[in-house]
Length: 148
Image (tube, rainbow, N blue to C red; front, side, top):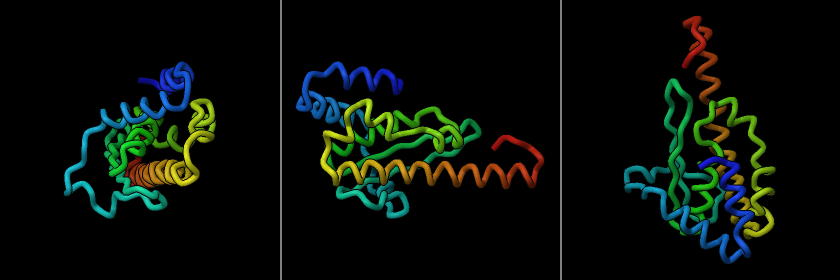
C-alpha cells in the first residue's frame, strides 16, 4: 500500500466512524510484539498509550515495526509505518508528514493527545533516520565507501 492509496482510502470513506473502523482494521494487521520486544529503549515517549517502534537497519535503508496496547493507536502506527516504508534515511527526514496527515484528515479528527502521540512516533522514526545518516556518514568517512 502506498501513501497515495492510504490518502485515497481515507478520502473514500464517508464519515469518521468509518475511518476509525478502517484505522482499527489497519492496526489489526500489525503483528503483535512479544514481551521481549516491549523494551523501554523502543518505547515512544509522549504517547498516552504504550507505543513501541523498533528500527531495522540494512544496506537498503531502514524498516520499522511497531505495536501499542491501544487498538486505535495500533491503526495510527500502521499509517505512520506505511508513510515511511521503503524510504532511505534521508527520504524519511525529508517527508512532510503533517501534509500527509492533513490530506488524510487525521490531524483534525483525532484527539489532541493522540495527535501529540502520532507526532511523537514521527519524531522517534526521524531520530532513528538521523542516527542512521550519522552512522552512514561516519562509515563513509572511515571506509571511503558511500553505502551503509
